[in-house]
Length: 245
Image (cartoon, rainbow, N blue to C red; front, side, top):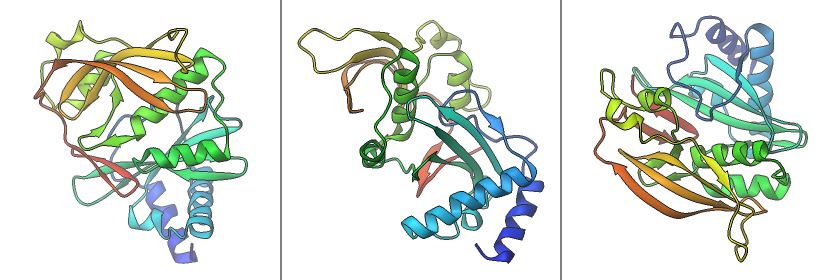
């Protein structure tokens, strides 16, 4: 980054466009907001690595980054997930996620290949239920199909955040089910199954996912619970998930 770009970033992080984050984290968890020099240095480190290793330039400036927060990732050794808040035009705030680990980074972009490439470089830790659930949340919230991400939604607050303001979610609340782990059949190559409710497109499903030892995930069953819901529009542009406010 040039000196001018760094100063532009420093000002943006000190004066974010909105009074609070315009959307919940893409991957739920225990997040910590970064401010001041720590925020600036974190974004600079991400940008410089992407420029040097992936030839991706000016991500902080091009996407008007003005917020940053981090959370640990138990499913990878010594890794954190960095979420940067920015904008893709007026009224189109969005979020960018980067996995940062000891030997590199991974800019998430909606493709499963990005996570599988990360798994080749840094084997996922899937020994405990917490590690497995952390991985499932990361994978499903960042692997996109034609109609968006496969977002686990197990709580009313998570559902409401995806619906248009003023929407009545009371009829759906009883159907919500946070992902629960169970043992796979003895003849299955999977190490665990997860059953819970998933938001995809404008529909809510009850889905069963199988997780393999190497981090492959497969949907083995799904049951539609509600369709044509009044969803808050969400789209993927490059590395940014954009939601209209």
